[in-house]
Length: 260
Image (cartoon, one colour):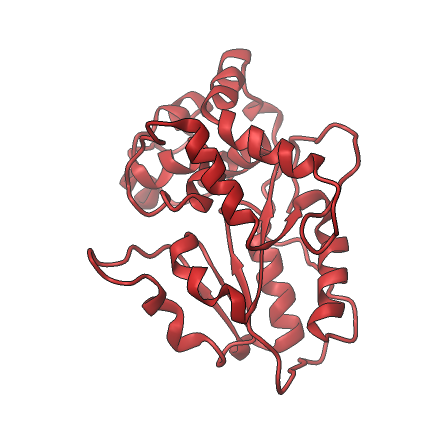
């Protein structure tokens, strides 16, 4: 595909919750705008007392699209002047995708998290390294509620307040559920002024294996540790408003198999 660039286009901002098709969207944007016009960040923790928005400010206007595992405070100031969206995924599927992804990582990286090669789901759920644990424990609410960068595995003294904070964040963004990602990007691209469909490649896919299906107790633990994320996802799924706010999805159950 020939790279496309709009001379007066607002930057596209994608606060990327881990394991929600980020690599696929990144590749799609590179195909549309060219690699040099897409900026991608891994996680970043702002220095104490600093303004997180300072991290992104130099890239606004220079990049057609900015993607990153950077929680809401990094993006908040720039959302009114950009096209900003995020993607939600069924919470159990998202956690299992993280498990499968980590199984592909090299031994030295796993050692940082206290995991051995060929670790089990039970080992994964027992991991208390903050970078892993905060993705297992209500990772979507944590990301949207601005707790993702704190390293604190405690959610909040008031879970309802924590959930409402995540919902308030969604109210400032365009939101897609991963099942409707192609449809959402098609609608949004037209609004962004892109005169053709954005094709989404399947990249960084984590395919389920029969050997890593969770036991009943492991599955129950994942569900319990993602009660807020499940509530958030179900509320987003049930909203029936304009597509440019929330994408509606079919009423059929969500598979926990591979999706992006």
